[in-house]
Each structure stands twice: as structure tokens, then as C-alpha cells.
Image 1: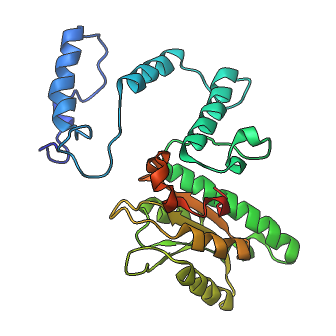
Image 2: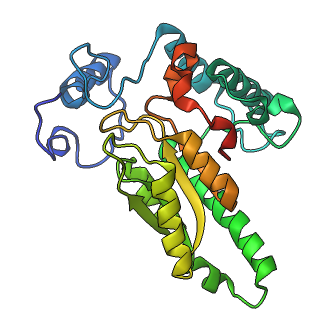
Image 3: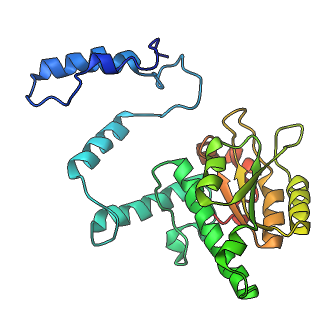
Length: 267
């Protein structure tokens, strides 16, 4: 962990962007003096906080190739190779994790992975999908309600141990999000979720979104996905799985019992 204090960097660089080029040796000297002195070394064997970024030689080469090709992949025609490789490789990842075929693009349905910039962004995208689906359904059931009326009633749920990005997703999505107290093993269980939903329904609210965390960043706790999935499926509530911290462990078959019930998830 670096020993620098907040604000250390500004005095070390010019007040304005340089207008003249510098020799390569000067650039690299600045990297050592300015950047490396303030880098947290996530790859160090002595670093145990958060999680490793797991860089490898193949990953570094792949980053170089990606940067050199520099394609824009927002539509298929913008870069067919970029778009199709993303779809295929995410199927590979899904197969490695043991996901059901219903999550894979090769299944021929609506499934398939999309790379988001961060796990936080993925949680927000899932929330927005759940919000749109629920608003469409409620609008059909209550055509007299306005969008504002429906939004005021929507409520989502997560474990108090969930990542802070889940709470931020609720704020950005403009909906209520309840952080529920877990059991004595820090897991969110089906009965806890069901009781919270019943309470909210009695108060005129509409449960629409649940985040199950498989590997919390604070203690690597796994919510009971199977129980949560049963509750969500019975109530037509979108279930999103956040496995950003420990999901890679499911590549090992012996850890897949921790993702029991994954077929009940929406995302």
C-alpha cells in the first residue's frame, strides 16, 4: 500500500498540459516518480485486501492487441469481430462456470452475456431491466396509474452485507432499495426476504428486484440463492446474482454447490 497522502500528485506535475514532447527517458522517469509512488500493488503476494486483478502474460498481450486494434463495438456493423467474439467468449465463460444453457447465447433464445464496464454497472443495468419489466406489467394491470405512481411503489432488496454498488444502483435507478439483516451466518435467506416482501405489499409497495450476493466482499458470505430464487419466482420478482467477488471459484466443480438455484435467476 503506498505511503502517500491525499493530494500528493498535483505538486508533482505541471499546472497545465505540456505543449512540447519529452524524451522517452523523461516520460519513464515521471512514471516512477509520480505514478509508481502512489500505486497500490494489487498483485503483491503481501496484498490481501479486496481481490487480485489476476493479470497474466496472456492478459497483458490481449490488452495490447485490443488497444492496437481499437475498435468501437457498440453495434454489430461497427465491428463484427468484436461483437461476435464477445458473445462466443461469454458462452465459453458460462460453460466454464457450469451455468445452465438457458444463460448461453448458443441456446438460441434471448440469453447471452454482455460485458459491462464494471460489476457495479452490471448491477445497475439489471435493476433498470427489472424496473422496465415491472412497470410494463403493472401498467397493464393498472392503466390508470402514471409512471410516477408506479415508481413510487417499487422496492428492491439485498443483504446488508451486499456491495455498496447495489445501494448506488437503487439511487441511480430512482427506486427504494431495502438492505435486509442477514442470519447469524451473514446470509440472506428466503424467509427473511419473504417477510420483508409481505410487509411491503401490506404497505402498498411492489417488490420488483432482488440482489443475491455470492461472495460478499466483507466476509465472502454466500446468500442462499436457492431459497431466494424460490421466493422471487413465486412472486415474479427479478433476481440478479452478484458474484463479482467469488464467482470465478465456480470454475471448480467442487464449489458449485454454493450456486445451487442459479437456474432461478434472471441475470
